[in-house]
Structures are given as structure tokens and as C-alpha cells.
Image (cartoon, rainbow, N blue to C red):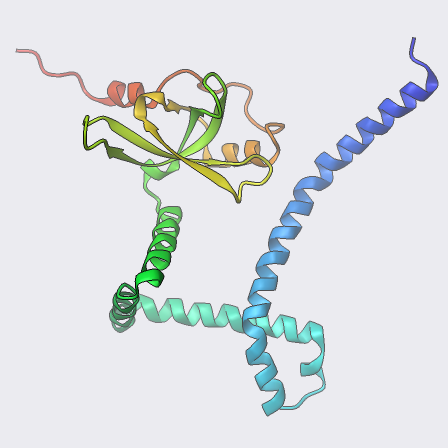
Length: 229
């Protein structure tokens, strides 16, 4: 029989856990937006301070108006850059700029890697949207991953998969695994469902998923049967 202190402690634990589940997603969203807006404000703040010296106004020296104006100016600059690069002349200038960066040894590696990552994230190809399961950290324990691309082993000709495994709760850090395609398990999860499971530690997700069908088997099943003669 439970004593009153034990019941009170369990009730306190349940309420705290319910509060964490309720406030947690809002808090993470707040942190992300704060980081993004802070970065935009930091990028545009030098321009705002320059305007404050050229056009002295009392409100330009206040922290809140400075931050708001800095965010607006940064967004406006990004819009102008995107608009210019979408034009023919802008694309030519941007291509020349990229070619110049590729001649710089260290800068070329960093810029090329970041550019490829952003291109793969913005790509709408179906191959970059696969949610899979892989044995990690040990066999028999599967982790959710994103199949980013496939490649071929130069020695054996075996199909290999590059799978990004984001960490639970904190998906901003991840592991990159390159493994045989036959060890990748295809799922029927959408990107939104997978990210919800990762961010909530599995608390939010579907009740039924594909767990044991390999991606290589799915690819074989998708191929039409060979014609008979």
C-alpha cells in the first residue's frame, strides 16, 4: 500500500515530466529562433552603427531598434544577393567567384564541403529523402538515419550507402556511416516523422514501422522481372 509521501512524490514526478514534454519543444524552438535572429542581428549590426554615425538619431542608439533594423537589413541583403545570383549576369559573376575560391587550398575544401552539404539539403530528389535504420552502435540495436547517397566499392563493386545518423534530442550533431547497402533497413517513415522521433527521444512517432526489410531488397523488388524467352 502506497504511503502519502510516495503518492505525492510520484504525482510530482508525473507533473514535472508532463511539463517537460509540454515546454520542451517550445523551448527548443525558442533557442533555434533566438540563435537565427541573433546571428542575423550580429551580421547587420555594423551597418546599423554606421548609419547611426551618419544619421544621428536617438532611436538608432537603442539596443532593440538596432537589433530589429540589423535583422531587416541582413534579410534585405540576402534577398538582393539571391535575386542577383538568379540572373544571368549574377550567375556568371558567382561562377567566377567560386572559381576564385577553388584556387585557395584551405578555403576551397571548406567552401566545397559546405556547399555540397547545403545543396544536398535543399535538393528535392527522392534519393536524398530516404529514412533508414542501421545497426548502430552495435548489431541488433538500430538507429534512425538518412540515406544521403550511394556509391560503389572500387574493389568488390559492392553497393555502399552513406547514412547520416543524427543524435537524439540534439540532431545538430551526427555520425556519418558508410556501410554495405544490404545492412541498411528501409523504413516507411517520412522525414517529419523521423525528425519528431529524434527530437523527442522516440516519445512521438508512429506505432508501426518497417523494421527488417533491407534497402537492397527493396531496390531488387522494385526492379521489373527479366523477360522470359
